[in-house]
Amino acid sequence: MSRGDRREPVFLEDADRRLFLSTLGEACAKTDWQVHAWCLMDNHFHLVVETPQANLAAGMKWLWGTYTARFNRQHRLFGHLFSGRYKSLPVDHSGNDYLRELLRQASQQMGAHHYGEERRESAEDKAARLVAAGLKAAGWKESDLAMRRKGDPVKLDLARRLRRETTLPLKWICDRLEMGSWKSINQRLYEQRQANVEM
Image (cartoon, rainbow, N blue to C red; front, side):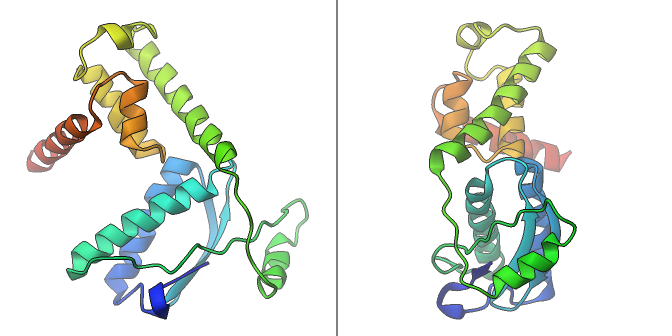
């Protein structure tokens, strides 16, 4: 659950709710989350999310930041949209009544600790699988990353996929793929997106 800053609205109109759900869908693609239920109120939201990987905090950070930027751009606003840290409650779904258990526990005090190293491991494990698959498809070895130019199309494709399917920052991705400055790669990825939109 997350509430608007100073209990102010996080959804001003139905278009904002559609934007949030679309952004949530992108977060699910990046994190492998499965959303079982949601409730979008004017100034807060509730989600029931299954997280096969230990990546709730990384995914929420991406979801918050991305939705906030899109909301602010849409309404010509700036600054924080959400208040403090989201509240989370772990639910053991080994039994058939785990959703009922969630609604019971939600009425009690919420909050759970998430450990940074475990979250990062999960995102990096997914990235490792994606990089290995990308290198294999290109017929490259790991050593080719250092030998190929920074803006090689294969590297750009891998960077784009890692951006789309993980919550890892672009700086980490550029370091991993030996692409140099993340700012110049960000510009190249932006230019490619614009070119695809114009086609």
